[in-house]
Length: 225
Image 1: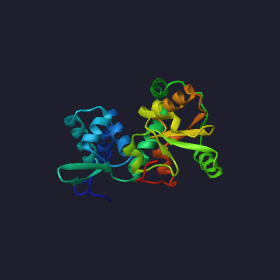
Image 2 (image 1 turned 180 degrees about the vertical axis):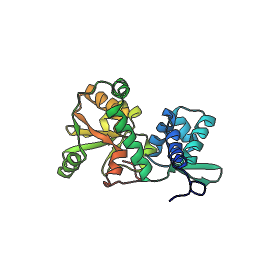
Image 3 (image 1 turned 60 degrees about the horizontal axis):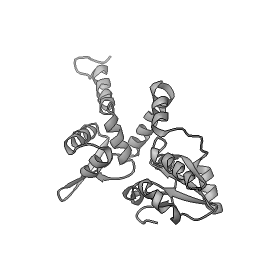
Image 4 (image 1 turned 90 degrees about the vertical axis):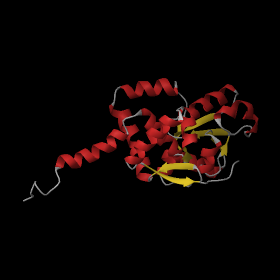
């Protein structure tokens, strides 16, 4: 028999589990995890990308660090944050899918954010087959620092904010497959609509770089195209 006087309690164990849940109970902290799933970043870069001031961003990151979801390294006066492991990325991806499936408010919020979507989307397997056949151009529309941190092999990078002025850099006649951070990233949706307005054939990958990495598919880093 366990001795309650000398053994930990079930309540204490579940309170410890709950501390992780509490760290995720903020939309902005989830957004920071989404950004970190693309690669390591400084506090300044995270604050700018998430639309936060430095003080607020630092507080959210400290909460995530205390829960063990992120890790840090120091380079001079700069502190760089990264996800503590692939299991954190898996948890984040699963949380979004479960919420989308079971929480009534999520589909409406998703559609309001991403916009109407009647475009065709391709799977990882379909994209790999079409790349091997050489009949598509793969376009990464994330910011250049995210592309450099890791991208689908052969993809070219034109950030969505620059796409309207750089459509001419895409090969004429080829269908374009667009991707961004993940399944709930609006950048690819915006890019497909913009390319269609310019008379280009464009479709989306059905998710993005987060899911591509989690599927253990090939990733290239560093160079820009």
